[in-house]
Amino acid sequence: MSDLFATAGLDASAPRPLADRLRPGTLAEVVGQEHLTGPDGALTRLLRGGSFGSLVFWGPPGTGKTTVARLLARETELHFEQISAIFSGVPDLRKVFEAARGRRAGGRGTLLFVDEIHRFNRAQLDAVLPVMEDGTVTLVGATTENPSFELNAALLSRARVLLFRSLDDAAVAKLIARAEDLTGRTLPLTEAARGVLVRMADGDGRAALTLAEEVWRSAGPDETFDAETLQTIVQRRAPIYDKAQEGHYNLISALHKTVRGSDPDAALYYLCRMLDGGEDRLFIARRLVRMAVEDIGLADPQALVIANAAKDAFDFLGSPEGELALAQAAIYLACAPKSNAAYAAYKAATRIAKAHGSLPPPRTILNGSTKLMKRLGYGEGYRYDHDEPDAFSGQDYWPDTLGRQHFYEPSERGMEGRYRDRLANWERLRRERRGQD
Image 1 (cartoon, rainbow, N blue to C red):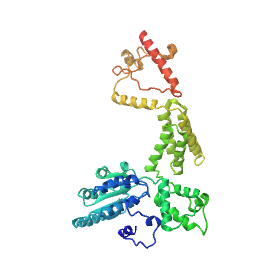
Image 2: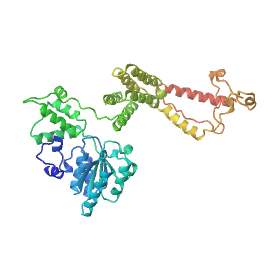
Image 3: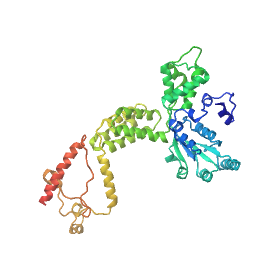
Image 4: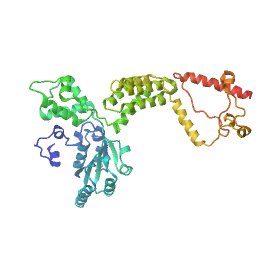
């Protein structure tokens, strides 16, 4: 592994963090990204072909994006150049490109690694696109944000996006075992505490090794930490959750789908993750209201009342007491009968309304407010439903040239089962009474 440090211009004997000392020397040593670096991984296949184009590495922190980029340069004998999209302006980029052109003239290419590439501004992008296209540099960008939302289309069209996954528990445990082999020391943890440390890392290999170092520094001679002591000593690592970016959208999507899927336990899990990550409670409340009208609708009209009440309760109580109201609403919504019939009807009616928005209603249902309007037939022939048998006239309310449309198809679940029967009865009466007209 010392060859890699020499390549990076580091003294292998100098004190370094454990995460740096354990950097893989080959792609095969990378942990947790077998879909990319394994025998049949995407990057392995590209390297077999002898070259690769520009790439964007998308994934959470601590999953090996920088390390893999460095290894790619090493295995293809490209010069490795690393910059940050935040701290490198256009003048810095021009210097990098000029040096790359000089190397290219001498027969060696350059791999330009851009950290936080989603931070590229328009000027930086305009500078880098031409050198990507003419082969002056092979660009490898790294981002923790969804490229579909955060990267310019011009860049995405020129680079292949590869997904780096959060390390699972087995991959984190493997990293810790490697650290123990490298240092010749076993972590002074009980089996339960070891599992807690793995979970604290939250899929971040760098964080796992940093936590391991903290344990070794804190432990006295012959001291072994149990799970409770471990959490006291290293403290709990804050969840990776950016309220304005990818984690925000992923977790609210997960909460919505678990409610829709009638799984109250999963709904509570994602709700609590959002609360623990510091999400805006009123944002959650608004989304619960949306779930009530989109996925439950008239199958249980009380769902909207409950969701609104939870919002009001949180407004009244605040955190943390009011969070229980949000949890209660999430459970209620997950347990409620589901129907998107009202939602589907609304979308269908919207399409027709936009397509035929200029059609006048039939004159029979318009008020004859003036003598002229009455002479023109406004309100003529209108039947007041409350005066009809069953308070139902069955008359036609649709524009003459459009004809009767059908949008709302209630399910048989919950209250909508009653509406279904009621609507079927009204349709029967409508046909009968039109036959009498």
